[in-house]
Length: 355
Image (cartoon, rainbow, N blue to C red; front, side, top):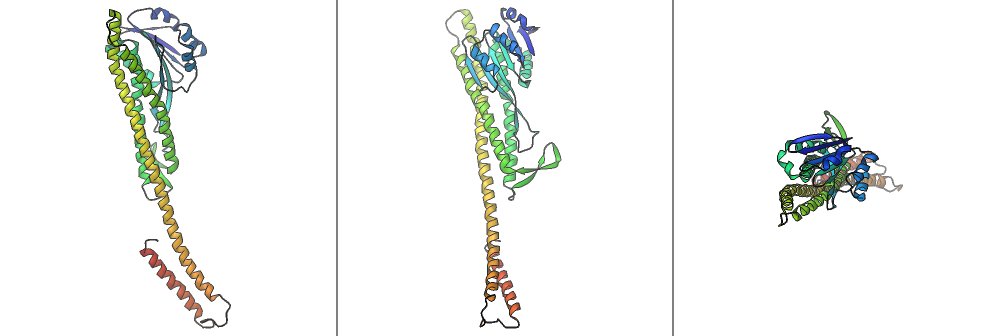
């Protein structure tokens, strides 16, 4: 599906992809071509109409690209990833979902966005673009800013989901040692699910690493746009170049805001990684302490049983001249001796807090 629109002075015109060359020739407006799940023939239009670099076209055709910005002088090629919180899963599953990979080409008066999956960020960007009239005079790079800002803003709820997940895991790590604990499922408050804490911790850690793999390169990508905007600052050239430089100066401030947000998100992810590492260490320490307690109990019980075995073994020897061997109360004496020694050892172990 392809949506094409031309925005100029607050007026929006829809048109077919075949008329894109005509609208690109107009002055003062911005052409936005949005492709969702494009076919190979539709992707070929990027080469035939916009004359994009073959390497950029190759990146569009292959999913799983790293977030980046490629500067091709007359336009830039941006790859960004859309993330959404996904709290519907059980706690031992990832708490975010990767919903779309967005490829965007931005030039002086056009932007082309390509994504194979439906994108909430693109839909939100379209609403913001139509309602934010004061940015239209800044051209296509203002629209690119809105798209980047929307994508990055959606990272914050996803990061908050990690915060909630780690807090819940910490609560169950520090409770009395249980390898399997019962935890309410948010979908159904009355239902419970068995949870292996170690599995949940590893799943959250893997999800954090995956999120950082999407966000950290985007920070560097926005920095490239900042350098491009800074290089286009006003100079002593003609009026057209000065006007373009003034727009770049304003856009620099907007991109600086997006860059600051990406830094905050990466720093927060790193902080959560440290917290998760501490939680994992605490879980292993709790498991180790639980094992120590079990060993102490088993050792104490073994000592009591060994004492009883020693007494019974002593009286089980086949010697004729043993004391109490032919005594009428010998059995009761041995049984009483076993009970008394067992009770005394139990009292001793209790006072040492081994039992």
